[in-house]
Image (cartoon, rainbow, N blue to C red):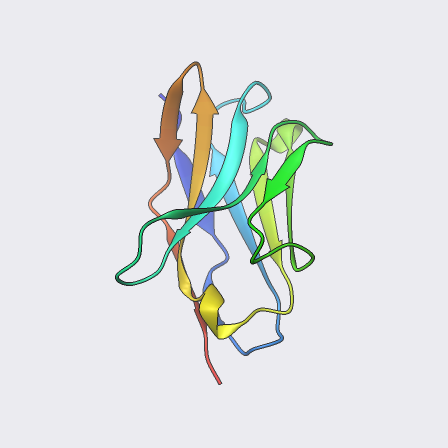
Length: 114
């Protein structure tokens, strides 16, 4: 059982930056890690995924603005959010996919306001 704890969410103005962190309770070196988000009234969607240190995927809506990275030694995954927009407002969830099982964190709220 992998436990994931997100942090770093909050209020940010358009064009600003935030860095989300996801701390895992055990090694994530063999896991595909991802960040998802869910806005009110919408389905949860993939934001970014990192398979290895050099293999990443991004939603088209965040390409060039968000960067996912991982520190396997620290069992932590990050999402650097730059040039945020109002439409980035959502609850952001960390995901670990390991041995055909998905594990989720409790989510962290990101609100972009002006």
